[in-house]
Length: 543
Image (tube, rainbow, N blue to C red):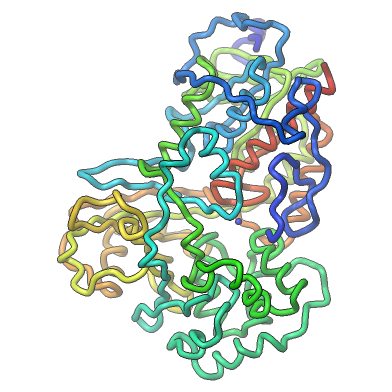
């Protein structure tokens, strides 16, 4: 990395998962993964021949860099900037140092801590996650990274005895039928017995076996897909709340190809979601014993998601991380990237933008308006979390399952509630429970403008009516995440393809994050690691 003082003061959720070392040329569900970037010029072609990954020794990380400019051990080593210190940017920086330890990697984070939305706090014995509190294991990227970091033994499974989800129906909590996972009824008898659906609604679900495959190959919304295959009632009372609870999305606009390609493939391959679920049931015991999300596939670090952030940061070289440093402008000159920060302009051979799409667009619009314009087309929604800690005796009826979701047709004030201390151990003191209520989302954005007291009052009133929570909670905490969740609207795959084609004009630039190929923690890790591999391949061709 070199700083140019002369310009100081110049003005951030498929059936066949992509191979870990492949750069997905198209959106999941739209096509198979394409070209793999060979990392050969930097001496790491062994990673593509199945050899062991290089493991750099642990290093302490500093929040700001004390490394003098030009003090690198190898002045000819490539310099790479990672902009954004969330889980995606951390994964990118970590992967760069794994595969090319001789490179000079600098991670810029505008805030004063790493992790982005991932943050764990402790309050009076409660362990509180401010956003995601777990990640799924049926895609490998999260678990693989934890293994490489030495965290695998710290991953907690969900409590097996409570692996069920509930849905609000006319003010009551009713269980999701056993074996019903988002869109796929794996067992028919629980559907028949469920009070969630009327007899016409149940018969319509059973009739899914007779619904013909969709002939068109174009994208389709979740609402259209679910109504076509399972009927209006199952969509409104089951599918919409279960899926919207994950994506905080409008089901009428959510893209099946981008968000839920697995179910599109189930229809294409088997002609029926029920038939496909039967095939899967024989291979996965958890699929037949639980309901809602497949809770047996989820894990969480024992000490919270921040422990994953800290573990990654501890592996980065000293001086690599620079928190409290915002990149305000991006330019290119003579094949080098120029990044404007508060005290000057810094030069790099390559750059990873691990930012939300609007922030990436803002940096890019000065020299590539087409790419910036496409990035601006990705919409975002926000949400709020109200965390409440109760004594067990304040919940007279107790808690069943891991939580509940609320259909839009119920017209209630919360989207869902998650029983954090039921899902995982160590989240609340003895004889206490920790509940997180979710508000806002794509369909209730105005709720984020309410003050904390109002949000707490709404959450308490809903929990009082639905689960019998009584009295003052001993813990209350409100967290807002405005414009934090990218919305995968119908046509998202095609939009991402256009973004990736535009990015090809800049071989030493990579975009990464949850705006493109998946919103979960493992997908963010994959996105960051693939961005790192693409950058190393591009640099390898140029040196």
